Length: 487
Image (cartoon, rainbow, N blue to C red; front, side):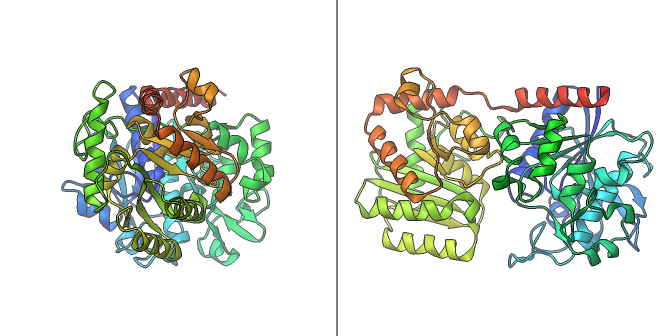
């Protein structure tokens, strides 16, 4: 049995902006089910405290660089036995808005202080210096918000082994030299071999340099980030750590307790491979929800996404406009929020095709399940995608993904080429170039194949048979923990 401390800035269902929250809940639960002693440390955001009925203050600590002491509150992650520690500092976390930004979407001005605090707390707990009577064998940190923690304990004797997981290289936690000084961090960290990055401080670099092992969330993305296109200036460091066998890609899993069409409480009618016809009722319910023409023959395409360029939203909008202008019997629904221009373009598309386009700006957990269950295909034309979870949810629900050949999308979806279809391997549609033309050509393939229901049904079954649960991924993490401790 290993003792493992997870440090994360978001954990589902406490607070969520993306896949990080799903993984930060599902992986600890899976490891706990394998007999390991897992604890999670995250900020006590206002939204988190509002959800909890029972919390207990188990420690009060003073951290370097901060005037006031902070509390450690203890509870358990909902629907699990995993201990959840909440870092309670009202000045930093008790506010409206998201974990990283104001309600209007602008980043919190004190994000560096807020997440340096989280890293310092994780480091103190990792060294058993807060009076909790528990010391981990592994400190596992995720993304830039916890990147300082491995750096803070790197030189300490009897420290735990450290793992740093990259969920998205595009967000590195870059701040000025003045902020570094204001945070009262050890001056020895301000070097090119430390946190300094072209005159700025990089939280992400702390994890990349000082962690014993770096992981990312798919094998393909682990290779991609060692290149100029995906490395964001850190590709040289990442390639060096890969040569040392200190960088690996472990594909995320999905939580089959939550994402399974047989028992999903959010969808109109449960279904399975043996009852695959029941999926049609979810399509009708989704059409009703968005006031679309109720038609089983129409090809219904779904999107659930942050509305940003990374996700290829511009490609989707232009391609869908051309498809609908051409008069194809296609419908399109989208759930998401992000850049104001994309939100407005979606509203314009709906206004032009009110019986064929449905949009919901924001995030709605129940609706996300309904889109996965009711759509025929799911669009993810991402310019880059470290892992992606929605394509795996889609496979589980027999909703065929349309994806770019990148990151975790490449690792999870098998293209519906004639060869793959005949071999019984095809689970979706894959294209290479991040262009409108490439996406449109692929959607033409989708539309043509949808008219061949026997082939389409066969692909749905193949997709649903794939196992992307956390079982395999959790075992890979366990093997990695054993390896780095013995190393």
